[in-house]
Length: 330
Image (cartoon, rainbow, N blue to C red; front, top):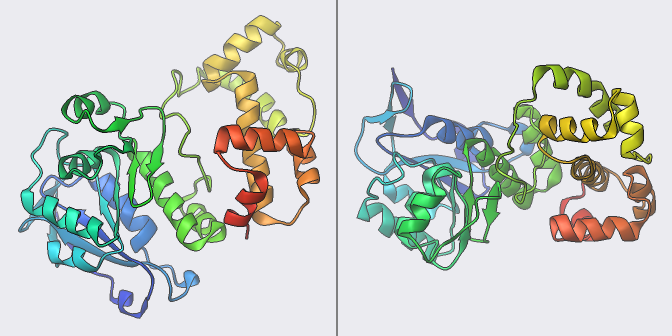
């Protein structure tokens, strides 16, 4: 099957940031699809200021892509010259050589102020270009050791979903690329726009970049998932209430020790960590979408007081509730 990739005809009527996504022989189609879905899909509801999307082939086509596809691209590296955001999908192999022409084009784009973003193993391209030197970065946890061995001047962090260093952004595993793309939309167009894109993707609107890439038990044991599922939903619906482990264990019909062990096996985190994450999620939603006072949000989210809520926002998110509202409030 051959896919012909062209700039969307409607792009000419748009005036927003220019996004250029790289295509190459051995293209990783999932990460490429993420970039298109977020930045290239027509979104008339966003108005004329939405992203202007294009695809740049880094070498002559037709290009082979994962999944038995061939891709024909209208534009080459010259299309990067005016891009405001350049996206590097997962690279064809973590140790595959990066063409010097691509390295030069990326360096030139960075020097003129373009943002450059890698998804998953695309970090290998940024590393080879020298753009990650003396910076923090992330990639899929499988590739960190290999890249860190070759590029000792890069501070790789395996424990995060994505890293925003201003003009250089990196995402971890494939799905984390969606989180980073939504993070960029949120920064460019605000929380409501990012939430709208997330709704069409049928995804949560926001996962923090500092969230762990993986947990030891990502898929719950079926029997425990069935037993704890209703309790987890009750906990979400009652975040404003005290939820001591003794009460939760009783609701689950387990001893406290058994409940704590099986809760962690099922969710990958402790009861306290899970509740904190859910309370922060609920508080962020209230801050983004209405003008409820900080006092009422603290109570509704189970923090009790604004001071306690501020403490957890600072520690977990690196910001305050008020600053978060100013940045992401509708």
